[in-house]
Length: 333
Image 1 (cartoon, rainbow, N blue to C red):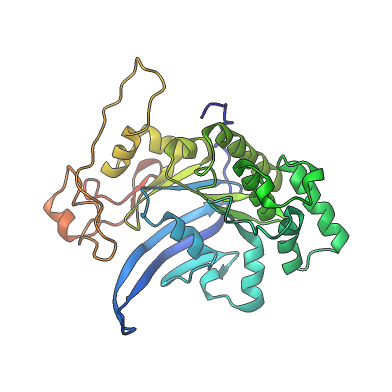
Image 2: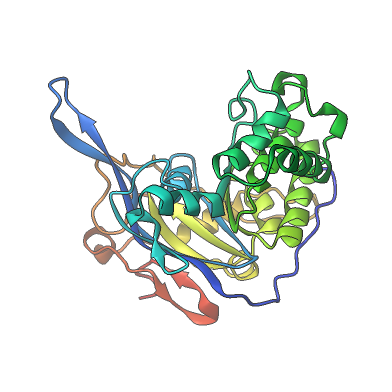
């Protein structure tokens, strides 16, 4: 990124706001006759904790289950099993008004700033809509808040009545952020929020996200494939591979002391801007297995340079090592 990005202070501690336990999502594969002939195992019993005013980054290759994780948490798609405990309640068991109330507290910013905004609505109406759904304030109150949020996210108030097609991609993503903030959420799920933007705009949006996180006391679940972006914004990072969390720890610990072979390979691919320095490049051989028929044992064993017999038969648990560093690998069991 060409512009400077604010590096956040990760020293403060906070309380858990969301605990995910054993979350699993399988998509059924239907035959032409309507029978289920198999499943796409998108997310496989993952566990993590999100803390107040902190950012948990979820990283991994395309198709590893990152976006499915975020969408399942919001019940945009229904989980196969597991729990997501928010304020003492399991989100996956809520219905009706209770579920609506939780959706007010947990908002989402989508990857594509173009398709995530209704092209037939003016941006003022787009930001007001969540407040209308949750019956927040009067019409005048909603207009005032929408204009204030536009100003906070870098959009001029006189653009309130414009349509989405009149804005650039970066401006549309700012509008998406304003819409997510409209109902005073506690948690915001950010699904690849800068991947569709020009590099010159990415740092502006990241700095905006940091500013509104501090102002509104937000917890972020930040989903991305770009480790350099995650390093700047996240307090903790979870690494996913084929629907499984294989490593999770603080951002500094992950980048300074990666343990899982897959994590080491991902970090080795990050370019170094200093041409006088070199990093050993770790090449992962082979293709990613199909989530329809994932490998037995450790899901990474078909590509791992350190594979052992146990790796092929026994799935490693996500265990905690030193410095609250959790890893699922037989090399450390």
